[in-house]
Image 1 (cartoon, one colour):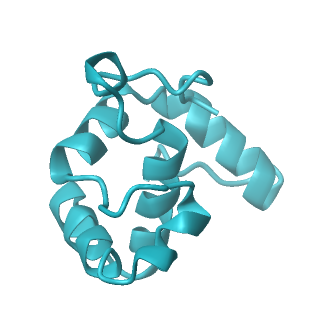
Image 2: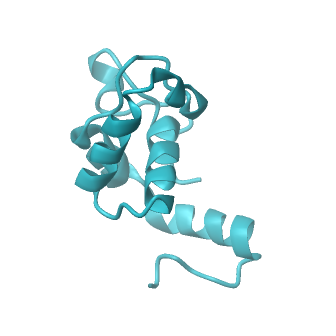
Length: 101
């Protein structure tokens, strides 16, 4: 889906905090809640962090949400076209492209 399957990322090499899949799931939820920038997404995640149980469904076992930099690194490392193809096939039967908007 455009993300490393093993969860490796810049933070993983430094002691690892969050899997890219968890960060991406949080980002999708934040976008659905109206957030559009990585900074806004991170602020939204910090707000839900107040109730630790809300982080668990995203695969986050820590008591803190990812910071702005964590979202940045995941977005930067994504293979956008591969993710676009996967989302297009999954959500709309391949009739729509998010990347070309």
